[in-house]
Amino acid sequence: MIEASITESDILACLKEGERLEGRGYQGSFHTGSVGDHKIFIKAPAGTGVVAWVNRMMLRHEYEIYRRLQGISGIPHCYGFFLDRYLVLEHVDAQTIRQTAISDVDIFFPAMLETIEAIHERGVAHGDLKRKDNVLVTRDSRPCLIDFGVSVYRKPGFHPFNHFRHNFSHQHDFNAWVKHKYNSDFTNLASEDAKYFQPLWIERISRRLKPTWKKLRRRKVRRD
Image 1 (tube, rainbow, N blue to C red):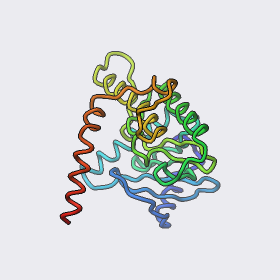
Image 2: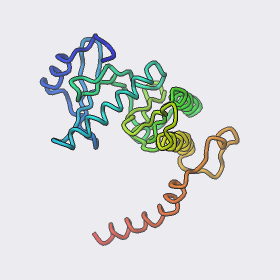
Image 3: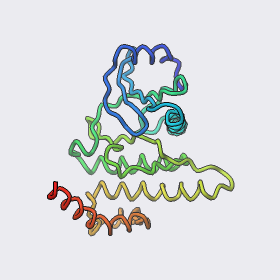
């Protein structure tokens, strides 16, 4: 646990009192609540047996990532991992970039780049920033990055597979930033931004297959 101001009893009380379920992800359910002056966001694992165990391990991994990123602007504060199952974060008053327009791109995207570079400096690569639900826009048009479940921490020493995954995700973060800033139009990148964009092999393949996939989906909709 990172802070003693929120206890296990507080978390159980929030859940018992029926705090609102905001959504459901592949790992489990999301709840919001308040403990004193703290507005909190609770991630709880889904499933039973082996599935529940895997989801708890993923949440524990995410907790360890948040611990490494404490104090970075644009990253929610983490209050702890309670009862080996509940990841408790600061509840950020924001919407995803899928849900809202960015009022000042000249402020938002430089700030987002600073946050990405800051987490990289601590050895963490997010790896899933292309997913619009993982990039929030706060009320004052600042970025907030969330959901570090698949993030990679670069281990010191000789760990070739870990380093491969980290390097891959590291570049993926920059490519995601460019994608969001230019709304997937990579034809006219500014020179200062082009240096961050290096398409990965899987992205090249995905880009080639995407038109075919869209055609197949349209055909399916017509048939239905």
